Length: 487
Ligand code: V55
Ligand code: FE
Image (cartoon, rainbow, N blue to C red; front, side, top):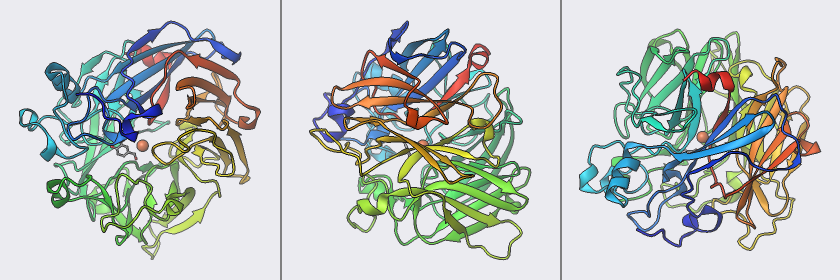
């Protein structure tokens, strides 16, 4: 069960397999503010075993969770795999048993009916639990201090009846509730969605079930004070694809997009659907409502952004159509049109949008994202990374002034998604830091960078050396010390 020598398993994308505990990491430059007390959790796909089919996509690796614990101006690290049901069964077997991404028809007979989730997409603390998330399965409950897995399949005390749980739940900054959803909630490929409200203590207190116009990769969504907003995007699948062993998802350039807006205290009957012509959008920067007018900000591209989920009609991948720019989608719940008004917010090409999470669902000013600056040189033997995305710039967009503030990380590095850390004691939007992992692609190493969120061009306020390569990851979040200790 060796790892294949394919691009998904080579170079900076080589599996890491590093489980680690490091008591402090060197600060190369600058200083870590002594009053930062908390942890930055993040997760990356990192396969435990070589794939059954000879190759696999990055999205299918086992979730490796990293905790960067900040205290007294020092940073320690813990890194552990999330012990999903899949991880434990394969560990016991000493080899891969689960096959291709989201295709149980490719699995070993011995694991039929088992949960296929990899917990590789997002990690966050809520209700004293560290939840490691993958959108095709229930959360994995981990200990926020030790990163030990407490429950490989966490079902909220039996209340989670959905088969799935999004990797992009939101925390309402006013109520402390977690607002989440599941898609394919009644089984693989189903059009069933469930929206969940989860109390600050972690109890499911409300759920709303509904169906979407067509099955799709509903990877993220938006919350506002009064609504939740679901975008149906043309990354679709069906049983025929799975039987033919095609990649689970494919891009259908003939389908429109749909935007479903549900009043937070409403029922499925109150859901209103809007639509627009074919395009690509996955992550959501933020959403908010002004009365019945709902705004939804997303990095939107004209065409498919994922070469590994190819055009369903066999069309070639078109890199120039994969360029995404933050675009504001606006609809009015009482308006007389079902169309979506679209306004481009910036010319920067980027993805991995973040905000000051204290302003989730609210009218906001500051947006952050990773940008591909094509004008900057790349000085690597392999050129741009295996995913085709060379995120070389960290950017701040001021929605109020339209100004941008950027930091280019140089010709031999790329960046992972930032997370916002509020400055202790502050309440003003954007007053805080961005924490980012730098991929040192040439030397196969990693650094941790800390920026003043509103002074990116000035460069990091602290640069720390991570003593091992951190694999390219997805999402993560900051948790202050009091949230970690509440476990
Ligand atoms: C994404 C990532 C996933 C996934 C589905 O858009 C969508 C990102 C890391 O896994 O399963
Ligand atoms: Fe995501």
